[in-house]
Amino acid sequence: MSSPDLVVMGLGNPGQEYAWTRHNVGFWFIEQLSGKMDVELEDVDPSVLAVEGTLAGYHVVLSRPRTYVNRSGTAANYLMRKHMICPSRLLVVYDDINLPVGKMRLRGKGSAGGHNGMRSIITALNTETFPRLRIGIGRPNNPEDQVNYVLGEPAKNERDSIEENIGRGVLLVEHLLVSGLSSAMDTFN
Image 1 (cartoon, rainbow, N blue to C red):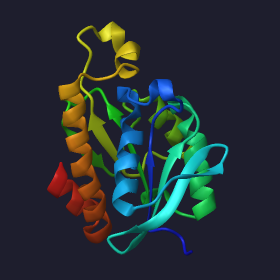
Image 2 (cartoon, one colour):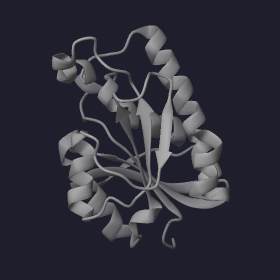
Image 3 (spheres, helix red, strand yellow):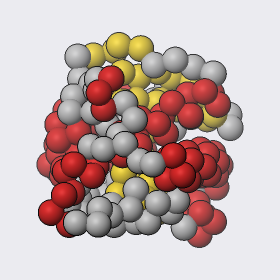
Image 4 (cartoon, one colour):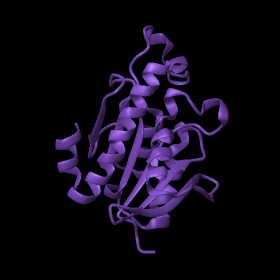
């Protein structure tokens, strides 16, 4: 196959103990998108699970790092090299405590914003200029409890809101492919 139009990488931690934690929202996103595309992720490298498919007539790669969140740059680097794409064709999807539950933000560039996975990717790619979709998970009541919060499971009503938001995010990816980043930001932010 030719170089993909878009590589979508959802961040999270491997292992069943993390499956439903807030930090794995990126994995939840990839699961919904792979269901829509009717594809299944496969082992392609020690650093990543991935699959190629078609969405809205475009060649898309879906991926999840096999490393912990703070080592996500390894997977991003592998995907960039393997598929010979520029950073503008890598969409990273991840949780964000700075956004309320049920909100999402698409940006074309930016800092890590305190997210260790994004910090790892920015370091590995040596750029902050690549699209990212932040899924809001809200903040803990006690700011000192941030680690336990992101590694904790959301209440059912929060999870339902996050899942609904992810559904909108799947539509966002289609819009991004068809109409471009600026249009997707104007429509979905």
